[in-house]
Length: 572
Image (cartoon, rainbow, N blue to C red):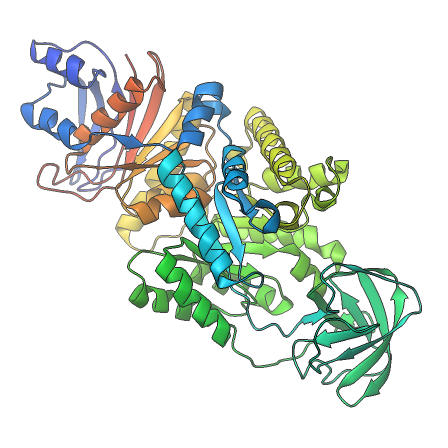
């Protein structure tokens, strides 16, 4: 394959030919032999055994790249476990009253939390501001690199609340009144619906289901807009429970025609823009247009790049799934809310289909909800819960998320540890089984440059796996090629060097990617040599280690023809 302006190179370390190699040895510490193919127009020229000399311009560029900002947790894990021991599945923790202190947040970061999630449905704006600033303080003072995500509240038309701060036990045959009238506190056997039209179109005999089956009721009487219901399946009634209506075994579908983002949501969005968060998870998304609208708004209002994730939690979102995935920057599979509208036995299949679609379209996907639900109250998970975690990792989900387990649970740190150890063990098994060969890729690019980038990344991962290199290094401005490498789920970890802070934080959700902030120069070869030198100086690589290098840094005056390349370097 020969394409003008692109090259494929392979490099191995040997001794240099002349005295200038001493400069290379002293400054870079990584002597290199150029051995491979270069492409120029339609002519393919082989270059074998050409020795690379280090010029003064490359030496000067090392002075520009003074340090690498590798987060402290990844560096510690790398020292302890080596390249192939690094966990690739990312972990998201919901922050709540049980883990909002500075000390508890630090423990979660040290336990493997990559992204801290805040749900705008709960707590005050001052509380959220305090947590966001604590996380940023830890990043700055402790050398961490934790991203911040918020969930919008959305139009809460599917929420009912009994008014009690804790869960209630619903007894069989007990009769409850569901009403849209406002009242303070709690009333016996009385439930307040968040939307006045919640009972429109509902008939006597319909079934009201709480939180996908935590408890069930039969509608026995309709009193204006209120409903009197009898419990047919006893269970727990949680505060702010999600509900749905079913008739003859099918979901009663109703079109409320309400905006996806409420007035409160827009106010919350303005607030989090000012706080400099990294992700917004958009609740109750049912079409692509709402995602595009929010992304356009953020583009005009936010100085930094804020990624928009769409939460898949309704039947309508499943019906428009592909267009939603294409429009978003990532997906969250909200399994509890999804289970309210989709039969429980279909959730595992739906989860796998969404995960596969996201990987095919190169969008990160978070699997969320009830992974370790029992650990809200108990220190040890059920074996079925561990199997659920393992299955999500086996499906190559980018990230797993704790909700109540960390936000309100008694054993949040232990729950995070279970996610960490289980995902690491499952990744090791996948590596042994070498399942990456079965991951067929869907072509995304339309333009020639985009298609070239895809082919380079597909080939790079195949090379990395076949050559058993220790790591993949990618130099990227916006993270595109880092995400394409991640999509292929390579055996070695992907170290993504970028000089853009928002790109670094966004890559925290990409499977197998370790983002590093670096002051990159225009000279690609200098960047490569300099970063390897600095990583070697930290003692994180040793003689004999090999790394595959990919770049998508735009061409410059120094390297006008080389914008994308593959190289393999052996540390000597």
